[in-house]
Image (cartoon, rainbow, N blue to C red; front, side, top):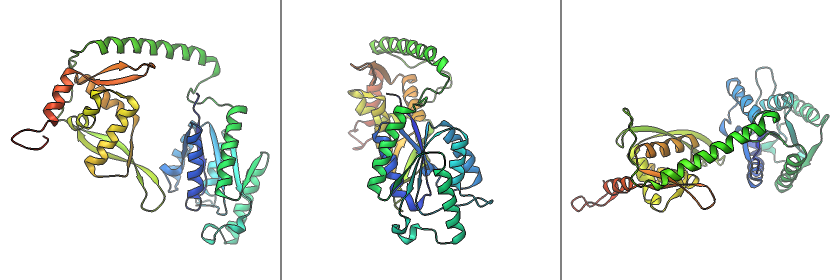
Length: 330
């Protein structure tokens, strides 16, 4: 199934619940939400980054309530600037405008006349030349988002994960398939070699060496659930210990990443950690391969499974088995 990246834009604090519903709807449809949760404060430098994120997205969802939002030095809200950029970039825009702002609670409404006029002009701009959907309740909005996205995916399909010209896509897919087959064959050979040894790299980091692991943490204390990047410093031996017992029966790459983040939560006593970057998960996997601690096998459906080698088992026992004289893990 082709996956699309969908940018969700709105004012932030007044529409947190509605944004959460829209993001969940995108995830339920099997696609990738993106938006200001990664950068909820607004400034010019962050807006330049947001433009790059919009460039990478396939669809743009805009939710408008009864607030205009934070403004730049020229008096234009960042939400309107995002919309203008998406429209200028030719993105497929799905707009959802609140149809009865008088029923919105006072803390989520603009009352200053100048701001109210800006919001009205913005609503008119969004409605001009395109179909928009109107909503009054969270439930109604979520249903409209799902219906509109499904229709857009069907009637206006974008490039999705393969970002390139249509003329190059067939050749690119052939190359990807060829590489996949070569990779599977290499995995079969590797999986059969139970005596796989550590590769000969002069400066290869050992189990006692440290590295910085990039994780995503969610802050729920204020009710926003916003996410931010954090760095946790651990040794390669610690990273190995986090997943080694589970590798006795083998783990898929996805479960491998989940086991690492679960271990980090316990190690740092930090329940807010929700995921590890896919790049760092791959780096940990490659390092374990290079150290001869794990090997790759194929699952019954052609996926990748990570298993301990004999050396990996011996290392796990050395690092984690309870010593008679210590009475605790080393």
